[in-house]
Amino acid sequence: MDFDALFNEQLDSLKNDGNYRYFAELERKAGKFPRAASHAEDGVRDVTVWCSNDYLGMGQHPKVIDAMIEGVQRTGTGAGGTRNISGTNHDHLLLERELADLHGKESALIFTSGYVSNWASLSTLGSRLENCVILSDAGNHASMIEGIRHSRAHKVLWKHNDVEDLEMKLRAIPAHYPKIVAFESVYSMDGDIAPIEAILDVVEKYGAMTYIDEVHAVGMYGKRGGGVSEELGLADRITLIEGTLGKAFGCVGGYITGSAALCDFIRSFASGFIFTTALPPAVAVAARTSIAHLKESEMERAGQRRQVARLRKMLDAQGIPHMDNNSHIVPVMIGDPVKTKMLADHLMDEWGIYVQPINYPTVPKGTERLRFTPSPLHTDADIDHLINALTSLWKQCAIAHAVA
Ligand SMILES: *Cc1c(COP(=O)(O)O)cnc(C)c1O
Figure 1 (cartoon, rainbow, N blue to C red):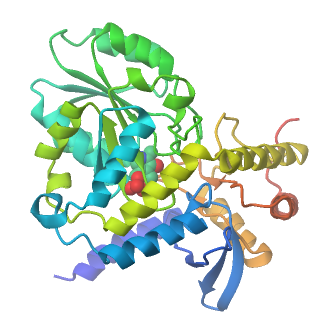
Figure 2: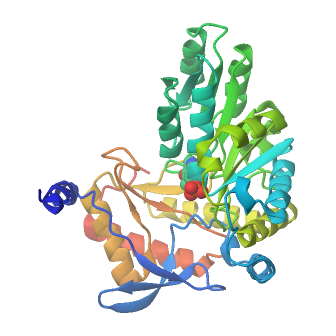
Figure 3: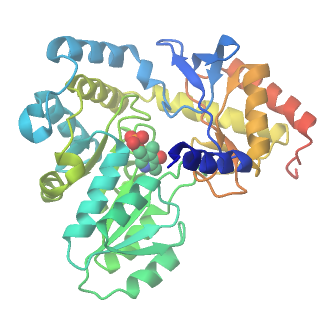
């Protein structure tokens, strides 16, 4: 059988739809963020990265770099095993304590990624709690969706951020069934924020547990970077808070926090936690340093808020439509995969601006977009340059301007 022909058939259909993914080959440069080298067929050049999830530039913070180097020199490169078989290092536990403290919970558990933490936790909860029903926000991330699917628990979708719909669906489930309401705080593609307090009010009426993904909020929201749940003073009403070490904290790995019993339950039963090599201890050292820094330092968050507001204001001044939201994510809607890629190519080739076109299945078809994430390290001149580029392209491409 010609397997490559089978593969190519599906790849060709992606290409025809404009949904084929081309990766930008970047070379990050410590100390230069958001500048990076871009390797392309016609050579290497410097670009400004406008779509990084290293939201605060912590991946290049001198303290975090030094911590990882110190960690490697002290403990070596790898953990040496799964958590159960020789892989649990002192630095893992220090990180877990730091995370539990960050969210004001009894306990925390780290995973090799945020994806794995969602997948493993939801699949374990859903499969081991008898008659469990998982109520999942329709906008949830693929890692949650896959975890729920794998659990084979009964799944009920509720309309995105719609508390009335959630309540209607909670009411329909027998009172004695364990119910888990799973949602995110900041949704990564629209940048909208869940009505967490209203969700908790409803959930508590029906005795459900709450599972919140704060991946796009930890480090950036709340006085200590504990996420939107900290900012709103709601963390103690949430059963499980999940996050990543790979975005604003600038490292890699994921985690959950919650009661000691909850974390012990996941630790004891989750295949995705048990049967995989633990994170390198040096990564745990770096992540803990980054978290501890952002607990104390407001400078990065303030700088990010300033540059986000500045970019929005300047887009408005030019009549370039962007989605309104209360987060740090600035989506500029294009609504067509081919046009989105064309704009991104122009920005890269002619202006040295790298923003990845966001297409299906990351976002629904017809809502393709450019998603900008200003950081405290983007200068005013970087923003001016981006605005000049977009203004010029908008004229060239005759894309409808927003109604003033
Ligand atoms: C990126 C992301 C994850 C996965 O986190 P990683 O650490 O990158 O694996 C989980 N949830 C959401 C909403 C995300 O955007």
